Image (spheres, rainbow, N blue to C red):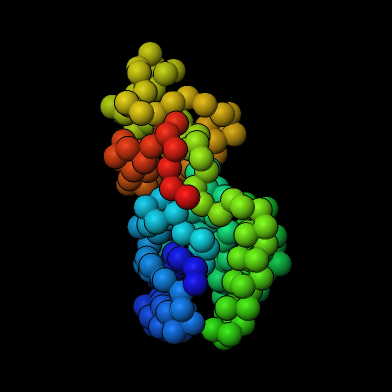
Length: 196
Ligand code: CA
């Protein structure tokens, strides 16, 4: 049995997958949006994430980069797009495998088993022991470049995570950035031991 976070906005696919994976003994937590999915992933430190690329709030590829900033959890991307370059981008962004819709639950479960076997070998399938995050903006959340202190619990470590997050926070919409900052401010445990 694995704890699985499923991020899929199509409710028919989502409920079909929740049912099929639950029947196979997995503990499935489902989200319909990228930001909710990110919250679930941080909360639950799942064994595996199944991620739809076309989401209503942020793209699956952007979500994947956010996840990769904080977690080494295996990610299977489920996509309707059979475009090669999209798949390459997703794998480059840190996906472990992908399935193209429509796929059967048996097919997905076989991919999951293969990935979980590999992850067991690595012994690293949860949140990273020390989260490395730097939050820049939104205003009021502290910006070292503007002479402000970062929020309590946020530690300035690691250029890679900083670059990824700065890029993510600069993109798209303030809501996503605010949610991410809130997530951090809620004590996700920057610099602390978290999860698995
Ligand atoms: Ca979708």
